[in-house]
Image 1 (cartoon, rainbow, N blue to C red):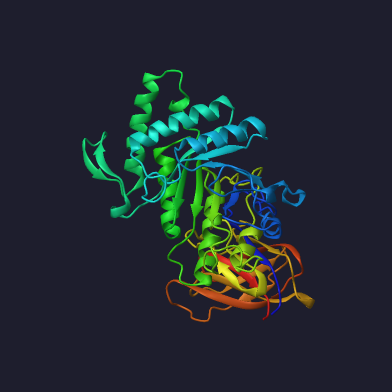
Image 2 (tube, rainbow, N blue to C red):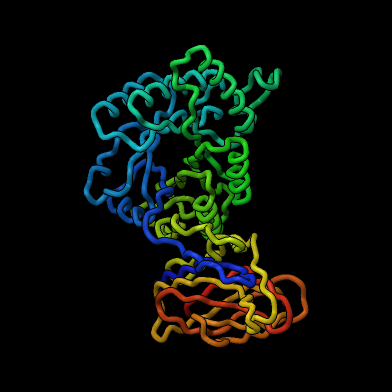
Length: 435
């Protein structure tokens, strides 16, 4: 199989009468947000992941030796105080006193789930206050608690809720956090010198599908405005195949990179040992998931989301990875263009396509998802109509895939799309190599 990496980056844009700023494409290299959780990791695998990953943690306090290697520089280790036990606090104290200070400390792993740091909201508030004071003395941020989004009823905390005034089972994180905040404020009021009144950042673990991930990130933004969110575990437990997992990862990473309230996120986990959830293969080396996670672009913070009047079709329409396979990004948003793209109005839909590797001669296939029943034209890098594609199923409602051969050289290309016969809607575009 030919090894290729083809990345279709969005600039899914609708141009109105006035010209708009050129859209930004994604930036290659480590994302400041992107991290990974692991139990064991070899230096070679950590080095491979650091192409896209900037931090990691292992649910423990001490920094593993592998992070002391020069080859691991660029990936920060973040310690976690897993639970309220004094031994964890003593270990953290030793680390903060003797070693370089970490960027942050994670605290209280899933206090709302049996088998983890399971405790009542009141006990969690007490543990948080103690840990918060310790971190404040050393000038280190605390990200806590790190909540399981949802928990089975049998494994959830049951007790009298101080906000609702009745006994509840905390199967969802929000009521637990509301009770936690109630006790935290009460304790802080009784100890005015305590740092427990401050919540620097909040952690959450998400294992549902892409819609659940997007929903909870948005919901936390509404309920906790101004509080940075660390998604310290995410994965889709329902993925039935590697293809499912790749599709989810592409959409999830794009959503988390774009979410303004998400400060950092970490895949669970590097070393799960299968091709549906793990970034590292059992014998070492990155899986297809690992290669995608390490290679996905991230937004340019200097230019991203500064396009007044722009309608975006999600961060990237499609991304390819090794062996020429491709993963569809989310198709929620669409770009709408009007007929008459050559009458001076400049109304065209535009995508930016980054080609990293191309075969000899640049032969490939353009695939465009557009509304049915429209003859579309394609311009490449401002040239006159390079392609004209007649719909294979004219007149039917909905989207269909338009395909045509298209030669592209390695590099950045701007593809503009318009319609000859009425309004058209475009959803995504990809350029694939021959197998």
